[in-house]
Length: 265
Image (tube, rainbow, N blue to C red; front, side, top):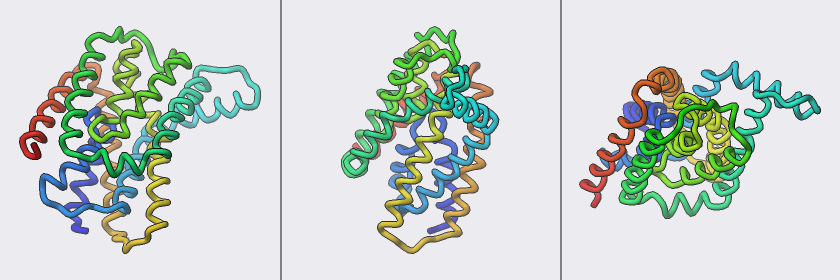
């Protein structure tokens, strides 16, 4: 694999994974725009591993606290905000894990059309902006009820369709439920940990079942670059989200959708 392509695709994955603009859509479209060869399954595993390293590194204190509280709750201790948040992450992951396991091949084969990506990019971008404008933005992630967690989890299922954006649709649902922008983003990012881990594990299993020559240099470079870019993206997105809101991302999604239609329509 061309190392320049590897770097750019890793930057793309690291930057878009946690922004509400769809990393999967960009990874499908950019090679088509530029006429690059398919990057291959092994490289996809590598850059997803990089984004997993980034989110775990950024939230390592919160994750350790939640894990300890969760273990104590399993042992019969009284529930705490941290243990409830840990359970929320677990239950919020169940819908996408089930649907992804059952329909992953269908999604991979049937739902990668550029025009479909254009429609989901534009449509869910508008919904994201409406949720930001109309949401009360008065609650934090610790206040979520179980029914609300499941609604966010069900919304996350839509992210199996390229162009939807996993972070975008989960933030949209959280904003509709009244969470503050930063709280919606934090919950979305924490929810990403088991989802990205499961996706990377599934892709690894597929890779082992259909072994191909592996470019370890490109994979290692992709992992490193995507991890660094994703870490910086999380940090600065959370820092500036309260000020900029979701409108810039909605506008970007609409412009990208128009570009897709122009090029592929």
